[in-house]
Structure formats: C-alpha cells, structure tokens
Image 1 (tube, rainbow, N blue to C red):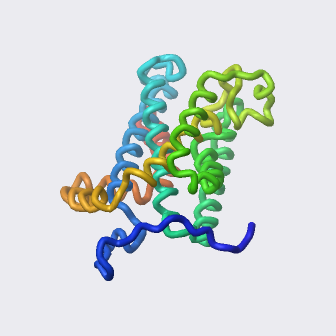
Image 2 (cartoon, rainbow, N blue to C red):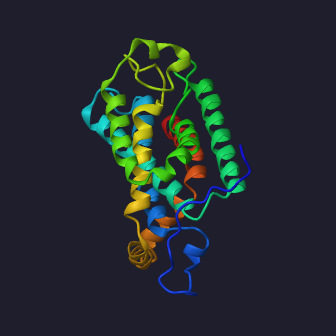
Length: 261
C-alpha cells in the first residue's frame, strides 16, 4: 500500500486555540464507549442464556425462536453500526496507519483465537467467519468508503437488502460462504457474513460523518461522566475486545463449577 497519508475532510474548531477535553484529545468519545458498553452487556446476557441452553438448564431454540433471533440481530447491528461510526470518527483528520494496522492485527489475531477455540469445543460447527472476522475485514474495506459521505446511506441499504433477499447457489461453496448470499445457513456457532452486515457498517460510517457533530458530543460528554453506571459502561466500551474474548470462557467455567456442585 502506498505510503501517502489519506487526508479526509477536517472539521474546523469553533474557536482558534479552543481547549480540548481530555477525551477528545485522546481520540475518545464517551458516548461511543457508553453505547458500546450497552451493546456488550446485552451480548453478555444473550451468550449467558445461550450457555444455559447448552448445559440443558433452559430449553430454547436460538436458531428458530423469533425473540432470540431479533435479540441477536439487534445486538449485532449495534456493534457493527458502532464499528462504522468509530471508523469515521477515528479517521476524520487522516488515517494513522501505524495505529490502524496494529488494531487490525489485534482483531485478526483474536478472530483466529476464536476459530481455534471454537474448533476445540465445537469441531463440527466451529466459527470460520464470526463477528470478529467480520469487524477485521469491514475495518479494512471501510477505508474505501470513507470519502463517499451521503452515498454510504443508499449503498449500505442496498447491501443489506442484497444480503437479506438474494440467495445464489454459487455462494454455497465453502470458499465463498464468508461472503453471504447462501441458500442456507452454514453449520457454525457464529456467522456474520460480509452481506448483509457490511451494509450496517456503511450506515455507521454515514452516521459518523453526518450526525455526530461537535454540539452532540459536547452534550454527550456532560452526561457520560455522570453516575457510576455510565462510568462503568464507558469502561466496558473502552475495553470491549478483551471483555469479548474472556467472557465466554468465564461463563462456561462458572456454569461448569455451579452445575457440578
């Protein structure tokens, strides 16, 4: 890849020399961390219930029940929207390539660990393209869409519709299943194909560019620091990747101990 730095549109400060908040100076937006923390907690509840079903404590069909299907769709959409928003905000003054590649390597490494761990536990339904795999690829592909601005809205909606309604037998082949457009859902514990879900990321990029302006973040910073719950959610949102990686081993370990006693 060329070494030239990609320059993206800059937003002028309201006043020259205006002081920057510690969160803004550090590249953090409390409202994004809070929303990510909320999505993370919702995912914890979902996965804990899934584990209860795995150990036979509850009887639920997560692949058929409309409630659980809707819950998964809402939680996953929240995460991927925030991926797009974060990508737009992190690159609004240009792409810091060293940090970008470091984060991408971390995501890819964690995705590989998920695949290996899931294969050890579920050899017939291991995760070959789950949420972390998707986020890693979407973070890379999303760079090509950062300049499109308003066009990301219709493109994102079209990709969502394609992924939801177009089913082609050619994409049933194992080598193409990560793309989506299959005629059936593959046997895997977590499946987040490129389509339709990359369309959700593009909607996030659109939102990050158009709606999250300076005034909205100024308001968000005020309430995001108020209260222990919000501070806890902010902490969780800032450390979402490590919490994602450890929560299932912790849940499964605790349930094994509890059910054996």
